[in-house]
Length: 387
Image (cartoon, rainbow, N blue to C red; front, side, top):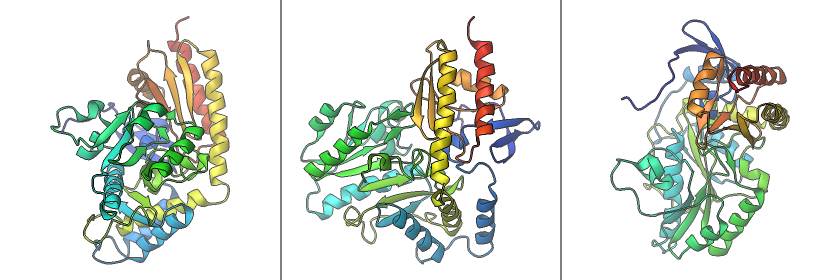
């Protein structure tokens, strides 16, 4: 189906931060498959984990248990706020699970009318019918009736958030950092206030950390910067370094309604995905890894800010934290066009809303590779910017 506006490049292989097209040209990957390839391409530890698991067990369904799934679930729970994990194939499925978990919680409490979910404009939660209902805007065009049980409020409007809470509210669903929305950070004080608001009204807090989680901001999850915890959290993208996998994490309390028969997945938590995911999360949790992301993120952002000073007619803002960064371009330059031109310079970036170009390289990027990335941008802006 012709649903993708693809760039006209056919990649054939990759290694580390480099991708190669069918002509043999090398590209520096600052997109990571949309913040997925946390360890670059074909990382030897992930390759080894996949190869080892492929020789013993591929798929058994969730009618049975497997050590690799249980061990990965334990690793995630031990490292986070969560008591439970439901494994999925994707981020959208993790969001579906999170929303069902919140509504089932209140159903079990005897208050099934509490089914409404508060979300924020500019968010992106996936492309299932329920997910596009949560985000609204252009993603719901032409798909018939959307779910009416979402209250979508302006981003950053705390008064509107308070006003939206009623006796039918079940949860607040939000991204600590809106990725597709243009690398828009929710301030730490706001995150803390939202946590307090949920506690005061007895509603659940769901963080969508599909793009911002798994070490991308220098913490395992971005909400950790605010020293708070959600009731439910979704993860995907970097969780297995490129192998399709997602997860919905929850406390015992929040997951109380998810009993036998209420949810399921054929492929979710399959041995191959869990083996690679376990290896990926182990690497993220290794001593020094997250501090590297923090330090290299500061280094890269500082270099991007210097480029903004040098090219103010082109770059109007540099946003983000860790290695979830964005360059807001002047309105005269459309981000899709710029991203396409940069491909010819050998640099892969990811367009986002608000005319923002995402810089989301693999978390293993080095200072030399940051220098190379910024040299490409410098040379490009020098040619493009009006004299």
